[in-house]
Image 1 (cartoon, helix red, strand yellow):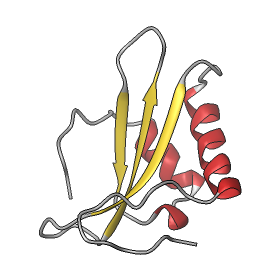
Image 2 (tube, helix red, strand yellow):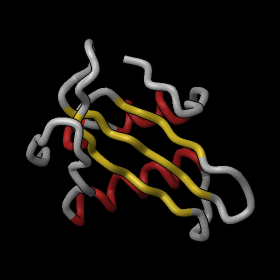
Image 3 (cartoon, helix red, strand yellow):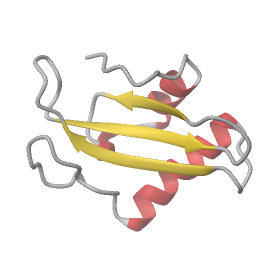
Length: 98
């Protein structure tokens, strides 16, 4: 279930089982080890053309730079196919692309 909306403010992590499932899918798709941190956040977006909620996936390996991806839908609607399409493409370099 998606979390409540507060314009432009972080909405926080998802509830336990759903968050764990998304993180495990990210780990599997990217073949990450347990030392690599995976963060998934649902954020409110106020930019023109942006959906009200989007999901940011970030990975932080111990021995290299972090990477992040933005999925333009609430975290509760993100599927494995969405993650596969986003993660196996190029990671974003901090830019927002509606």
